[in-house]
Amino acid sequence: MPISTYLKYFSLFSILLLMKANLALPSYLIGQIINITSQSPTLEGLGNLLNYLLLSTLVTIIISPFFTYFFEQEVQINVETKSRTLFSQLIRKPFSHFKRLEIGSLASKFERGLGSYEQFINLSVSRGLPLAIELFALGCAIIFFSGWLTFTLVVFVLMIATMIKTLIIRLRRPHISRVNEAEDEILDQIVGVFSGIRTIQSNRVEGFFEKRLAPFFENYRQATVSLAVSRSVFDGVAIATHSLISLSIITLFIFYLFPEQHSDAGQLVTALLLSASLTRAFTGLLDVYRLLDQSREDFSALKGILDHEEKLTGVSQVLNQVLEELA
Image 1 (cartoon, one colour):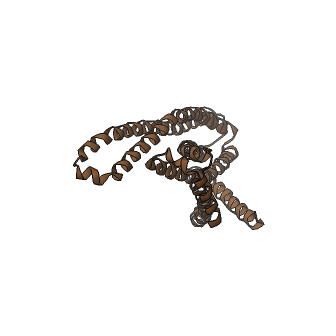
Image 2 (spheres, helix red, strand yellow):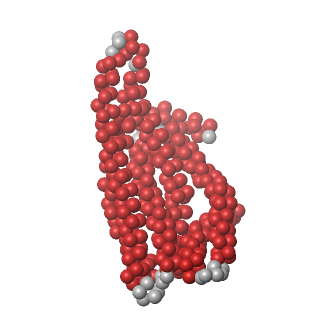
Image 3 (cartoon, helix red, strand yellow):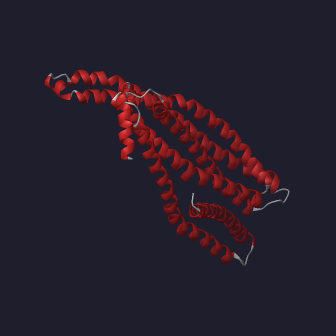
């Protein structure tokens, strides 16, 4: 890989790190603004804090679109290259390998496989990496501005939420496979019907095939409902986590930090804002993990086709040679 490419990736990573660190600054500034407005009659220093807050916001607004453009360019180049590679591998499989597959099922598996890989890259790089960096930056900010005790409390609640959500993700896997299988069955049936559509229409037996496909649609509906329920439970845990963290921090400040004079109202606001941002980033990261797990399930069918080894026939060997010459 050329040095220029390494420098480009390093620059993108550095800008991303600075942008995520900048996200923690407004929470601290707002806390200080509250302290000044509630404690200082002259409001001395308020103007500087407001200017810093405005500058921090402008930096995010101006830099973010440009960064997203160049970042997504690199991601999509990778996706395009991998999509071509997967198609090249698939088209070079022996003829006999495709005889055991329905056309509809094959098309569905290939489309879902490419889509799942694109989603995997987008989630892990476009969302996962920024969220991981944001989580690190906000964690450091909580330690620096609110103390280790607040950070430990937040981490404890997040660990409990992680265990619950990981269990939900594991329980979702059979439902994902069931939805994929139901989609493949429907597509197989539809391709079969349309391949003989003239015969069906000439014999006026459309109603028969409508009834024949009805159970497949019913099976798909039941599978998608089960998957949607698991998603709602996953989201419910995220909402409960945010509420529990906020309640825990307020309790900590009211019953311990305020009486011991270890903190003030501004620090409480800063802690609440930072913990809310941290929870949002953490929830987003777990959601990325959920979607990555679903992408893995979606890609497994195409991977099974590509990994299947079968002895080449004479015709397949000739086709492979022709394709290699054309490449």
